[in-house]
Length: 249
Image (cartoon, rainbow, N blue to C red; front, side, top):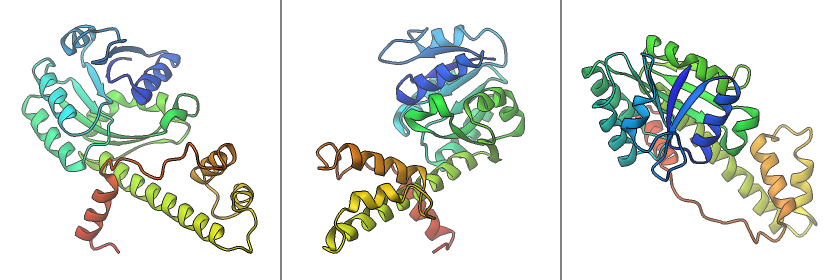
């Protein structure tokens, strides 16, 4: 299939490349340049066959809203907008409704895989109408590893699932960090890093995140390159807020 990718950063650029490797024809646009188009209008013009599919891999919030609004004036009835960023699921529900007023289809796709996705694949969690999802499904299946793609529900469901995914991710990282701090605080334990190396094999707490942590600790035992701070992208707070709403402890 042919589609347009808006946003060619670490995620969008690698996803476009993985799609091309699978035989798909990917047009690209990024504000910083480097794609096949120098504007959204030019990108849409490069998508000749209806229904046209435009996939957004850009920051959530105002950048996504601005691009979504511009695309509504460029696309035609039956075309599909896919938001693969980390948007709030309520924003996705709103955009789905607004797009429907223009006869345009909207799919919210949670994407997980990071910088490793190009080689190992991306987990795709898609929300939206079945008809719209089926149009984009060949791309979803190309991006995902075996059994790594699911249509998880109606509009907003994809980004709700991705929100919970990230909430679980942050909780896991916090648990690993707290466990390491306890090991380092007890003088009986001579080498906390050796513990985390051993935990990557056989234990019930091993995971990809734990393996990445062990790798980082091995390469940087003095924490010179490891920051104790990261920007809040929203999903952790949203997960807690929705847990309160749903009365889930």
